[in-house]
Amino acid sequence: MGNIDGIEVIGLIAAVLTTAAFLPQVYHTRKSKDVSGLSFPMLLMFFVGVTLWLIYGFYKDSPALIFANSITIVSVCLLIIFKVRYHNRKR
Amino acid sequence: MGNIDGIEVIGLIAAVLTTAAFLPQVYHTRKSKDVSGLSFPMLLMFFVGVTLWLIYGFYKDSPALIFANSITIVSVCLLIIFKVRYHNRKR
Image 1 (tube, chains in turn blue, purple):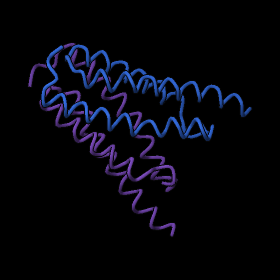
Image 2: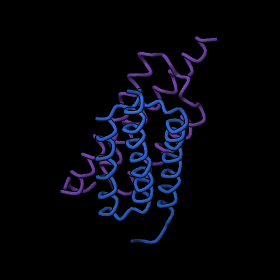
Image 3: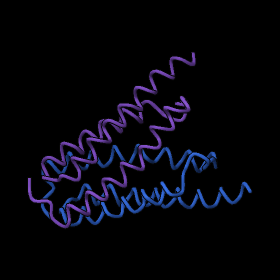
Image 4: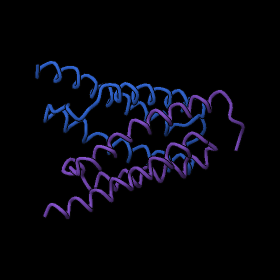
């Protein structure tokens, strides 16, 4: 992995901003237990996409991509868990 | 810009999956005109983040990042426009 240079700082700020913008969704869903707006195929698609971004980040030697997508994978997994749990609960 | 090799294909699939997962949100918001769940500071944060990702993508010589974030910038701009328009309309 290369040194953390100027462009990696930009990448890491980008990573923090876009992952941080995603966290309120996780919090909101956990609080409200309202998963009606979350589509399961969409969540799975997003999960696969983020996993591929992570693999891509390793190949591109990009700390920012690895950092951002590791956190996002956790967020997406939480949303999938909420979706399954609260979806069943409502029936 | 380098050739589109194997890892770029992975990156581009990742880009398609994660940007495609974002489009239903734009469509849903446009249809429902319900912007109550969209926070303005969060949208701005996301906009800045995606812009920085785009800059990062150019520096990292990454077609996948440039492609994904160009489309996402348009999506975020649409959401910001919807937020402003439908927020005012409700008052």
